[in-house]
Amino acid sequence: MKSDFTLAKEELSRIGILRVSKDFYTEPKRKGSVYFVKSPATHDKTASLALYPNSNRFTDFANGNLSGDCIAFVAYIRNINQWEALQTLKDFYGLADVREQEKEEIKRRILAQQEQERRKEVRKQSFYLALSGEIDRLKRWKHIYRTSIEKRLYEPFSDEWCYCVTELQKTEYKLDILTGVDCKAYPRMKAYHENLPSDRYKWLLDVLAVLAECGAFTATREEIKEITAQRDFELTRKPGAAVRRCGVEW
Image (tube, rainbow, N blue to C red; front, side):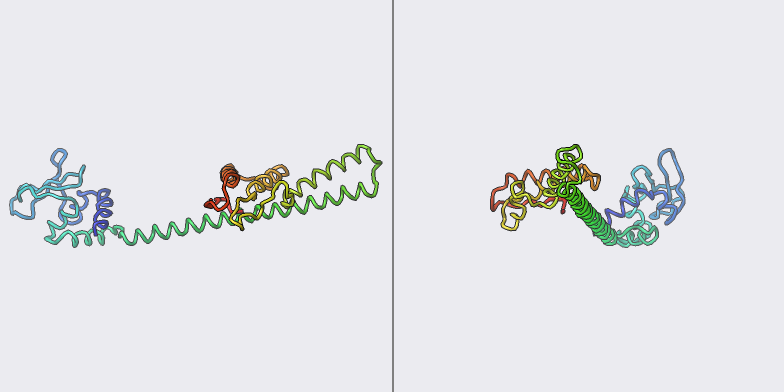
C-alpha cells in the first residue's frame, strides 16, 4: 500500500495540485505565488484554502491550518479517506498501479534477457561458422600446395617450389591451431571436465587471431577482454579451485 502512495505521489507531482483542484473541486484564484479556493469546511465567501503549486500541497486556514498533499486534498474535499482518494485519482488520471508496473518491469527484464541470449547465440553461431569455413579453406590450400610439391609441378628449390613449401607450412600451422590438435600448445583442452585448469581460452585467442588475419571473423574489444581474463584465470587456477564462468560462451 505504501508503494502505491509513493508511486501516485510521483505522478501527481507532474499533474500538479492546481489541475487536481480544477478537475475535482473548483478553479483556483491566484494571489501572488499562491492560489486560493474556498474552504469546504466553512460558508465564508472569502477563499481561505491555499494551494502551493511549487510543493503541490494545500493549507486550509479556515480549518485549523489543515494541510496535506494532492491525495489528502481530494480526501478532504470529498470527505473520504486517503485510500479512497488515491483510487479516485488513479481512475481519473489513469495513474500506474504498482503491481502492474512491477509486472511490466519483470516483462521488460525477461525480454531484455531473451534478446541478450539471442544475440549471444547469433554471435556464437557466427564464430563457429567462420571457424569451420576457414578450416575447409585451409584444407583445400593444403591439398593444393602438397600436390604441387609431390607431383613436382615446379623445379625443386625454385621460387615457386619454395613458395609452396612455405605456404604449406603456414597452412598446416594454422590448421593445427584451428583444430586444436597441437598437444604441446594446448595439452589441456578438455581438462575442465576433470575440474582442472583448461587451455581452451588460450586456444580461443589464437583462433581469433587467425580468423581476424584472414578477415573471416573479428572479435569485439569487450569479447577479447573477457576471454583474456578467463585465459589468465585458467593459467593460475589450481586443480579443485572454484571455476570462473566466462561471459563469452564459445
